[in-house]
Image (tube, rainbow, N blue to C red; front, top):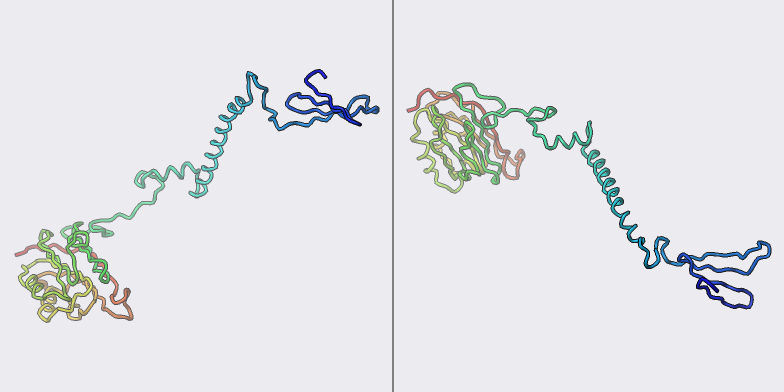
Length: 293
């Protein structure tokens, strides 16, 4: 048979097999009612896009030409979905772009940013009057977090400065200039109380005394120590006991009790921490002394 076909004899059927366009054609016996031979195409596994060998435009080139546009479409869809998700997560009014833009705009330059509460020296909510010293102090929290004493925006004592310790933390300040004279910590649990007495006995008139407790401020405190602090303006030192919290600002030569003092007793019924009361925080403005000897 012409065209590369093969004639296969059979008892009842004659089948012609030929290769045409990548398929196999089979013809059944002639049907007199149709007047033609019925033909059924059975396609082989070869791809419809496959080209015969030697074809100047193979199907692989077509696939490569389609791959580029498909990648671009996939990229556009991915970017669009990402944009939608980001917009939803950011929420709020306005477009997603405006919400993202706000993340890169500082609060000072943003017209929609809420104004921050201004802080003054030592973090005070308002400035001190003229000829006053701004201060803020915090007692220690249990035996874990050390105390802080700040004056005129300068940290006099803190754990960061590594000059605080268990017991009483005391900073002596010139009442006229506001300059730090000396800062020391005194261990009132296992230390020598005489070290504390030598520190506060020779104070000059007008010297400011800042005191913040940490852990235990009173175990080694004796009557002379209590009287010295009472003369500096303390009204609570006489009741100070084991693991109490205490903050105090006094001065040498004051006539009345100091308005800057806080005290919390150590009580298992009211303690914030196990074995210790809450930490105390105190801030304010201290009038400068007119003279200091």
